[in-house]
Length: 291
Image (cartoon, rainbow, N blue to C red; front, side, top):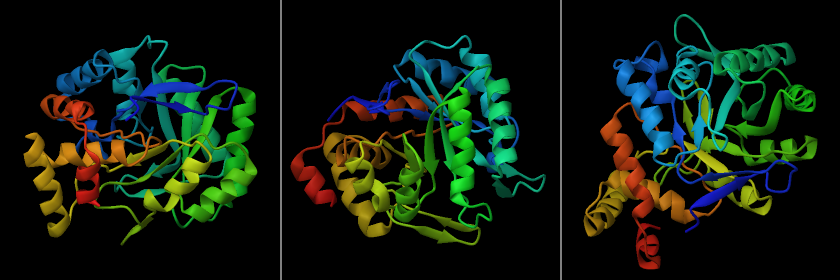
């Protein structure tokens, strides 16, 4: 099981990071809105993450709003040379806490400028364009704006988030796609439809990602299992004396060398538990049992 993964490995500026990363979304208040309940602990988690070898941190200016970006800057600036901060654009939040598209070329430029300002950077190393599933703005216009800002030097690498296989195929025809960020866990591998739209699953794009050496970054990767699946994962967890959530993360790491999990938490103890996943070596028998 590889301990690192390389983003944009065929480009002039590849980024090699450790598997696991850290997703900051849970550092905000309830419903991904407002300040954290325990601000000192949130800052300590970020510092502990970097001290523990995490050098890939996922954020977005619409977490909070702008809460996670400000926490990252307060905790970690000036940034270590090997730290990759990945953000997302394409959405925004309304005062009622709803999530809505913000993806015209002008919107995307506004978001990039805001991320650069709040993170204190001159260039964002990796930006995911999140597709909302009901976009009125054509994909080529959205990606065209992203690639334009890449040529200007505001963005180093462009990725896609919340994409179907067909959308990823279309994106690859428009320009270099460095990474994909989709919902993916042991129990949730295909599209999840709900009242607010849909979230394409990681399994739907994994083969295409592997063919093009594109890291797949799962979000919501912590355990959401159905009863029968939970029985299987609990059995393996007992074997290693760890939690089912840890086995879920270990399964992702073993499922493909092109998967870069970014489990998030607002608890320092839970963060340390997640980091322990790297020491779990699942056997071929374990993986067959889980499958």
